[in-house]
Length: 231
Image (cartoon, rainbow, N blue to C red):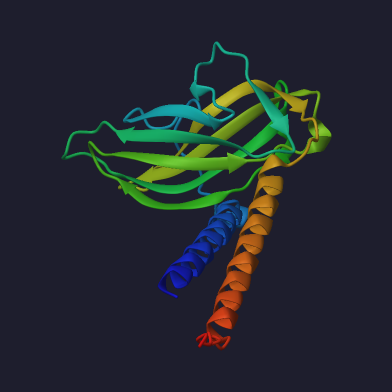
């Protein structure tokens, strides 16, 4: 009985962990939308997307796995699938200088050479955090190009907005480069197939365990016949 209870507990925990991990993956794709009227007015001069000279940025693409961003590399992204990047922002100010309050991060696809003409707007995500002098913070951003744009090239821009103690607002381009969108081949979802096979296997294992448990109880309840002594 003890071994059977351990066996059932293990099967239940394994199945529960699969369901939880699947639900967490679904929740991770949901990002909060903010009204465009909340965007701050950018007041830094010259290049409006230059950002503060006290903020240094490093960008790495995790999906596709391009790694650390380099403008010299040609970049291709799958249309209809989620891509992601990680941006590291560092406040290089000395301790007695300005801190920066993070506001928004957003991305968009623009028609080549026409920045004001947007082909697709990505999620605008509100940020909550303060970048103190000497501090570094990482931002994670996901975007999904429309499958209708596959086979073409567009300017991809991803911008973070922040302001300092004097309420001077900045918009800082994390990424701005012409990228190619390619169409992905629709194939078999191997992850889903593996999950279905695993659930079926666990169900069969549980049924076999229950059957063995009932048969063992039935054998215990059968009366044992006493052998008669031969006189």
